[in-house]
Image (cartoon, rainbow, N blue to C red; front, side, top):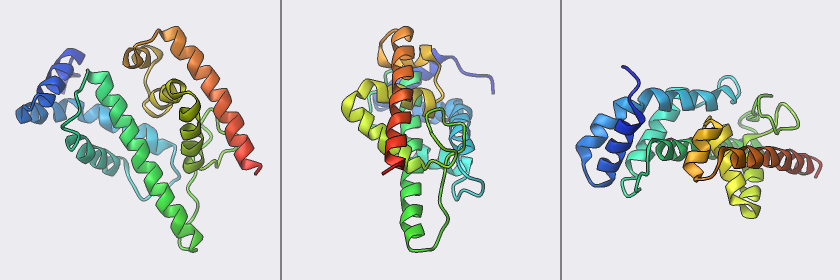
Length: 192
C-alpha cells in the first residue's frame, strides 16, 4: 500500500473522534505499517526471546487505541505519539511483571541494549529507564515528553516540535538536556 498522506490520516482521525466508526476501519490499514515500524524499534531494544513479539505489541497497542475513542485526535503525529506512549507502557508493564516473577526465581532479567543513548550500562533495565523518565516528568514534563517522542516514538526533531507546538531548536535543546539528566539519574540509581 502506498504511504497515505498525513492529511488523509488526520482527516480520518478527526472523523473517528467525531463518532464515525467507518473512518476507523479505513484508518487502520493506513497506519498499520507505521505502527509496526514503531513497535519494531521498541522490540530491537529488548532482549532476544522477549515474550512479546512485534506483532503482539502492535495488536495490544491497537486494542488500547480503539478503546481511546474519546480522544480528540489533533493529527497523525498526535496519534503516533499516543501509540508510542502506549507501547512504552505495555513493555514497562510486561517488564515489571517479569521482574516480580524473577524475584520469585521464575524468570531472567529483562534489559535494554546499548543503543539507549542515556543508559550507563548495556543491561540497564527498561523499568529503571521508565522510573527515571517518570522522575524527569515531575521536574520538567516537556523534556520528558521530548524523550518519549524522540527515543520511544522515533520522531524527528520537526515531528516532535509539531506535536509539542514548539520550535525544533527548543526540542533539540530539551533533548540534549534530558539525555544528560537521565544519564545522571540512572547512574545515581545504579549506585544506590
